[in-house]
Length: 352
Image (cartoon, rainbow, N blue to C red; front, side, top):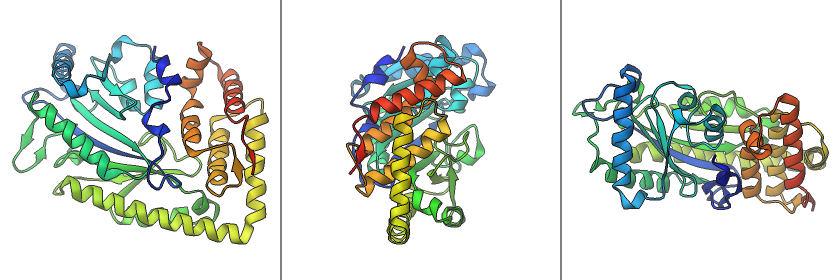
């Protein structure tokens, strides 16, 4: 199941985006709950199924969303749920939770709607690069269309009512995924990201709240939406992201001026390792791909582009490797398959 996602050349993350040399992706998420329904974690299986059925019927009644694929998660395997998590279509919590739950998604369009995760609905939209304003507008239009079919629980004072009090208000999160290798290399990332936290934004890893921060990939987002309009939140995150882009690019220039040959050697060694290794852990692959991104940005490497590297960030994840192999993999088999995939995809890459 979902093998089409492995071979698609149309997924949103395969397109170029603004400031893509630093910003990998933008995401906006809305949390919504149906009026007069218990929150998912308080609802019985029957009540959860009623919500799933109601949402599915509402989506089916919207021609603009006819491309969505609707999947009931309790009817698919744990491997398939992990696959959807790695593809950024559901959260790790959604994949692991019990009960009646579902997701509706269109990976090409860059939208997915989680049903009965923490809230009845988690609507999310993605775009490549720094495109928060456009992503927010996309999701706002979708939410408006859905609100004609579903009645969302809302209070005049508290705003949208959510299972977690920290999401009250606009019940919205705007986030961007950034690649900050120069700041990491220069040992400045911790200081810079501490400043991000001081202006009210959260810093997380590549899979959001459930992961440690690997390599030089960081996700920044607003922490609260209470008392703030959606546009204000987007402007705040967008402004900080643009500042990080400027700091990263200036640090890259500085580092290359000081240690250009050393960095070129490191990048070329990373390419050689990823092309030739027999076994690669996920962390080794992420570190190597981080170096290759810099090589592409600084034209040290040829035969590669950022979109291919974005694709590899997903293909090297465990469930994707199992899907490619068409079987479950143990740790060594997974490392072997990861090395094979990277060797295949990077075959044409070489020092410029």
